[in-house]
Length: 265
Image 1: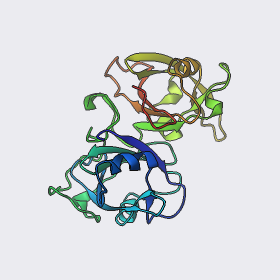
Image 2: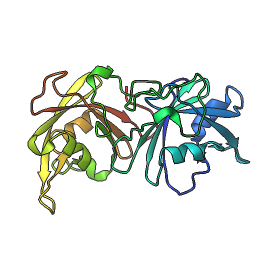
Image 3: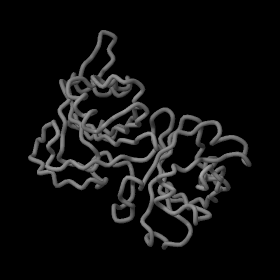
């Protein structure tokens, strides 16, 4: 069970409960019927939220009482993308991505928001992802760039996987501004011990600000990794000056979650 991962997208305004995937439900029930689970925001190792687990008449499992408090405290809204990792002992670590496709980071001063802590968290946890349970990035913490614009995710569509000359992937505006993509011509994608050089195309936008997208080289990355529609790519920036220096090539660590919920390894 430990290391089991899945994602959920907030698709309605109801925050009173959240349905869990049936596959995860079956695996979880193999160890007996749990009464509750503990939620933990990635990067806050000691901060836990007690959430009741509910089964309906059809055997579907939901996060019940306690989920609404977690959702409100983290400002969850329509379109937000949540990545869950089961750490064992009924603990789920959660990463939150908003509609900009970038990871959200939270500051819990003194941990005054509702919820319980099983080992007395004093509120000193780092607000960035500190490599705690559920961290999907197999990279040393010293090599990754912290902050809310240090990463983004994208679920692949047909336009990202069309003909070789037409494939592209738009980079979120907040991310490209934070990393100076207007002055860059290419990036380097790293995954599973391999690297791909991908050229950036700058498309003019109204107001004089261009929009960058992955273009030449993106097709080869998709082909080599057998990516398809519905797969989700997680991109995380490496710090400038590490793992190859701070030239014009921006280094991005990539992980891919397949449409069936499994990760490429």
